[in-house]
Figure 1: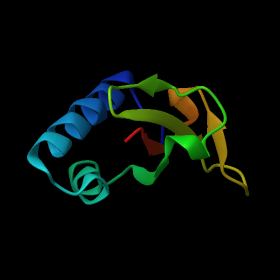
Figure 2 (figure 1 turned 180 degrees about the horizontal axis):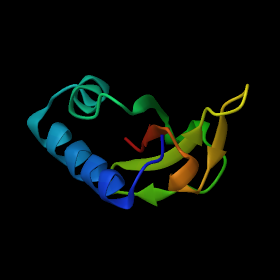
Figure 3 (figure 1 turned 120 degrees about the horizontal axis):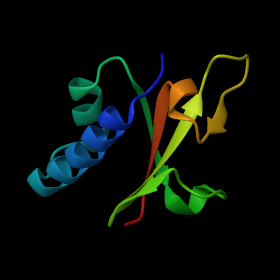
Length: 87
């Protein structure tokens, strides 16, 4: 499954909305986007440039098409999103 720029933008807006409402980030994202795999970590755990950044988060895309998961900067090969929280 490929991710579109429209989906990624919708994910960013949803993160902001979920945070503002005090809702669970991963549960909310998984509910809103059931076909996308989401993983959460602290931004300090990531050692590469994010695909996109917001005030409180960084987004990294990953591809599970091979045996091992790999980070990608190509939405057309991505099927998951790592949400790295900044605070």
